[in-house]
Image 1 (spheres, helix red, strand yellow):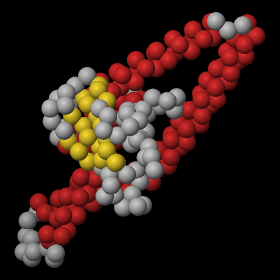
Image 2: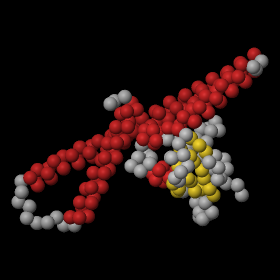
Image 3: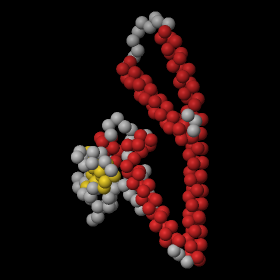
Image 4: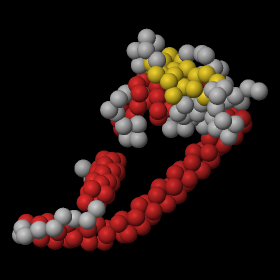
Length: 219
């Protein structure tokens, strides 16, 4: 049974362009970045998709492999965060460039077909394109509105908790500064680990807010 190629929904387009080649064991070249995939015959029956993905960033000299794109990305670009869209897009710029080139070529071909069509067909095509564009605009606006509402709901819930946490931290630090602490903290190591986890979580919040500010022009 034929297996579909791996999908990379962040970059694949709904109009037919895909990052990975259609067939296994075929190398797709994006300047210095080369990609290919094989059928993962050892995958569990409920493991979908059943692929092993390969990436080279030195024109095929060295290959990194994994079962998910983010896994291969981290191996190929150690120290870069796959989950930061700016970092990922910069690292994978050759792929994005190829996608944009494909879009431009597709637009030229569609325009050529449209220009050569009879007036009635041209008018119908233009109306269809306008309707599709308007529908997409409305969907995008609806999605943006829902995201904004969800973000505001999160801020309303998160803000008061962070303020309480800030006040409690200041109080605890003040008590520590007074000295006179003559007993060890019960289960100190496990509690310290939770504090470090909370610190990491706050760093993730900080990174998320900075990326939002970049998009919305608040920086």
